[in-house]
Image 1 (cartoon, rainbow, N blue to C red):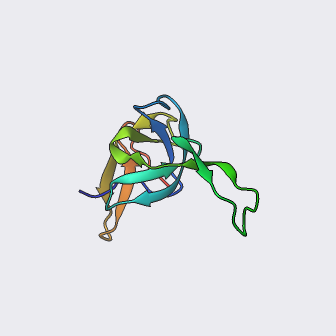
Image 2 (tube, rainbow, N blue to C red):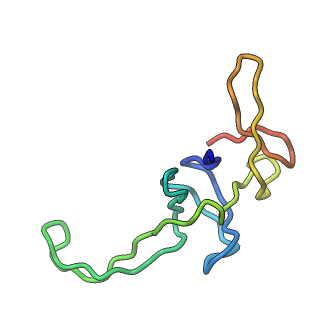
Length: 106
């Protein structure tokens, strides 16, 4: 299965504790079928002091969200939707919005 979400996309969260929120995709992990979204699924972790963080303490870190739980927000119609593909005359594929048909740029 090909991952239809790319780094830089604005996405809408469908399920989980952050349902209804939106954010920007920071990283996509296609083998695990997960993505890290800015400000979504933030976990707190206790860390020991080290050279970069001498005090230590509790650090907030975004953890991955399953790709099946997010949808791309189309910049044209400003709604979350499924991603479609369109083959151009020169053979290249482009991602399109299934609702309005406009190209999705990342």
